[in-house]
Amino acid sequence: MDTPMDMPYGAHRNSAPRALATEAVHAGRDDLARQGLHAPPIDLSTTYPSYDSRSEAERIDAFAATGAEPDGPPVYGRLGNPTVARFETALARLEGTESAVAFASGMAALSAVLLVRAAAGLRHVVAVRPLYGCSDHLLTAGLLGSEVTWTDPAGVADAIRADTGLVVVESPANPTLAEIDLRALAHSCGSVPLVVDNTFATPVLQRPVEQGARLVLHSATKYLGGHGDVMAGVVACDEEFAGRLRQVRFATGGVLHPLAGYLLLRGLATLPVRVRAASANAAELVRRLSADPRIARVHYPRLGGAMIAFEVHGDPHEVIGGVRLITPAVSLGSVDSLIQHPASISHRIVAADDRRDAGVSDRLLRLSVGLEDVDDLWADLDQALPERPADRRSAMTRARTADA
Ligand SMILES: *Cc1c(COP(=O)(O)O)cnc(C)c1O
Image (tube, rainbow, N blue to C red; front, side):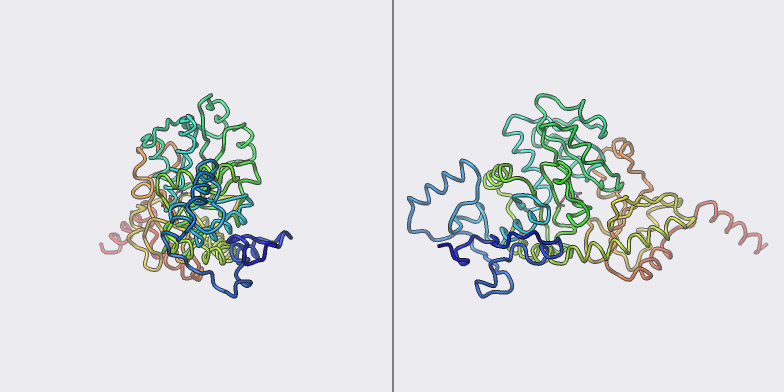
């Protein structure tokens, strides 16, 4: 009989559907109480003893055939790790997929997806701008041998060729927060896998698989970790694609460290609470920014969320230099607020024309709203925002006239 102790890591008996907030704190931990544990153990082993090399041979053959996680004890750290597997189980549950495969970073995750398709001879990628700057660069530079056609969502169906292996989008997109109708897009993709980078929305606000995406990618460095102290990536998908991803991960080595897996599982527990609280702060800041004459334009998705982009009439670099509470830094999704100038940093690697065509203006600032008190955040922005150049001129004229 299979006892709870024999169940694989992360397996759960409780098949009743559970709400997202419940999954966030329980998924990947279902076996703990039966093992007499409360916090998940961290397994730092790189290798595992086995006195039966015949059965090891069979397990390795099975992995080579399908990429399914080997039954029984782990084999070697690059094949899989029990602590990382807890995070994968939990994220799959939150995204509503069969499986998830974790990587050393978001870029390692995207690379693995591209390599899976390239290995099948399907190197052509259709993609919609804007994407995160380095994702754009990876495709444009063809570092992994892919060839990309950039189009808008309406052009995806026409851009697909016989050798198209993947359609890549972000929604809401980094950094403009542009949104895509994923259901309509998934329809245009036909049988070509659609990967949606869900880093900005998180499964709390959007579950792309429910709208027809085959793959959901995260830079887990952002909201999933949530505290700015772990770098990771993950792809949530069906088990068949997950097997291919594990084989690529095994062969190319972009594995996630078990300590990072532990921190990510811990981060997921508070994900719904963090995303909702930060989104409420963001919505209030959007309200105040939209009413402010120093602001030319505010970008905020209909979906909501904790990311804001805005354009100032004055010099955006003054905002970056002027904030005191908000940290001027690239990255996002942390408990504390971060602001950056995409044209200088996160999207610098994208050619200036492509960047501007994608709506990333030189005046655009991207703000990742954290969990601070919203009045403190506003006070910081308020003192950092530059006056409209016209207002400044008239203020100077007034001052000069007063002097005279
Ligand atoms: C940061 C980011 C990435 C890259 O993730 P890393 O963890 O930095 O490798 C990919 N997509 C989006 C939307 C991002 O914000």
